[in-house]
Image 1: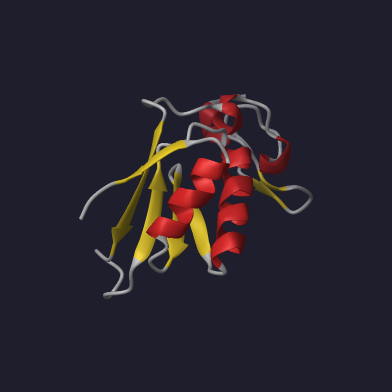
Image 2 (image 1 turned 120 degrees about the vertical axis):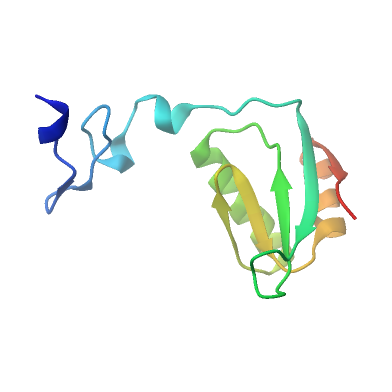
Length: 117
């Protein structure tokens, strides 16, 4: 099968992985299982840039696969009582919860520190 004639979307299974041609939920190739590289220190910072003045707390440097990172994000959002998301390996929690996230991540065994001003 040539690259230009691959299946992108099917009404039966939804979006498919470009490498293994499996549905994205069942994908077993390197895209879902890749663990990011880093120094092992989780950095917690606050950012308002590009959000119309609304602040979010960023948790960067967590060395987990994508599915485990989403589970950790869900646990952190629940502990803060706030919303958030995972984008490009970075957990974003709505609001300023730096101190609360620092203590929660330390209790979970991560080496965490506050970053930025």
